[in-house]
Amino acid sequence: NINTKEDVLKAIENNNVKFIRLQFTDIQGVVKDVEIPVTQIEKALSVGISFDGSSIEGFVRINESDMVLKPDTSSFAILPWNQKKGVVARMICDIYLPDGTPFEGDPRYTLKKVMKEAKEMGFSLNVGPELEFFLFERHDGKATTIPHDFGRYFEFAPADLAEDIRRDIVLTLMDLGFEIEASHHEVAFGQHEIDFKYGDALTTADNVTTFKYVTRTIAKLNGLHATFMPKPIFGENGSGMHVNLSLSKNGENIFYDADGDMQISDEARYFIGGLLKHVKAITAISNPLINSYKRLVPGYEAPVYIAWSGANRSSLIRIPAARGKGTRVELRSPDPSCNPYITFAAVLAAGLDGIRNKIDPGDNREENIFELTDKGLRDFGIETLPSTLNDSAKYLADDELLKEALGAHVHNSVLSLAKAEWDSYRIQVHDWEIERYLNTV
Ligand code: ADP
Ligand code: MG
Ligand code: MG
Ligand code: MG
Ligand code: MG
Image (tube, rainbow, N blue to C red; front, top):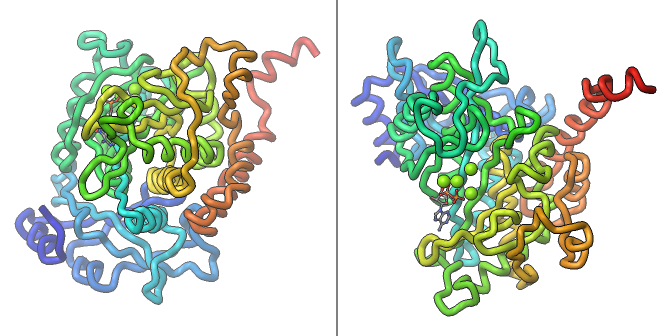
């Protein structure tokens, strides 16, 4: 177990590490890294390594671009691949300004800030994400959208050709300290899911970043392309990242209440109330791409309607059957293209708002919501998630609670990236339009 600076130096020596990759994520959740030779580690650990923040998406303007990376010693891990030219380790970094204050636009800082607020109320958030992804063929080194296998949900070899590669990913993640709970083929051809054990929100956000990095790397080493794009193929299920959530207080899961209705506590209910209240705005963060909204449509198991339920998988928020320690709230809208730090920060802030203000989530819905008519939806007062990034961004712009919780810098950056994405998309002329109109209009 590595925690202190001394632990890191010892691990470097024991494993003959030659290079260290210093990693952080931009506002969009893209992993960035600089590699330093091991000779620079003392400096990195004491004063940090400078970099130009103006070239990172969503960070700062040119005139205030000097920033400093400081590695989090507890994130030290040896990368198990490509060791021929020397062992490489990675460390996840926090971002500081030259004067030593934390940089407010750092997604990791944002999450820590909201976690601190939770801690003041005695709470710690646990998150367990379920990441789905596609493995596609590469032709002449270039990514295609041709699925690498023709397996379906829970199928195994020979249909599930990817079994060996998935196991390779799982073994690599285990080398990096992940506790893997399960891995299986998903519904679509070429689609997979790997589940790892939940942890506190910061550890899990770091893990999501590492997970994506490992999956892409191992796929590439096997001549394949792994993608976390939410909806790569029309007419097939997209990839989600369900987020399982619980709050603990003094080590106890406070969402469980043996005597409560459905055996869940008032806190769990209010937390859901807060999620439901802010979920339209959260969507701009948890579903940040134009393509994210191609997944959030009826008919492919992705949530569309804003409701909560027990085990019913047709609603946005579900309470899986486990009770006791495993009592949790599952939010099913996020997809794996989101920035996990900002997403967990927003989800936590919304849940805390629910608890503080005792927000009533309304009745749980146990019918198959996908089968309700428009009238049925109206009668139950069930609303829908925003159907475009432009819409969800409007909800986020108006959400004062999230603006306050995330900080103006991150709130602004997310909104301007969403606007740029939308502006670039809306002026395109799509193949669909040509097919539909060219000959008939
Ligand atoms: P599903 O039934 O929705 O497919 P999975 O079994 O794939 O669910 O994933 C469940 C996730 O929930 C795992 O990451 C697991 O570690 C996590 N989990 C279990 N208990 C808790 C808890 N108390 N708080 C948060 N996450 C939890
Ligand atoms: Mg699952
Ligand atoms: Mg599962
Ligand atoms: Mg799944
Ligand atoms: Mg799930």
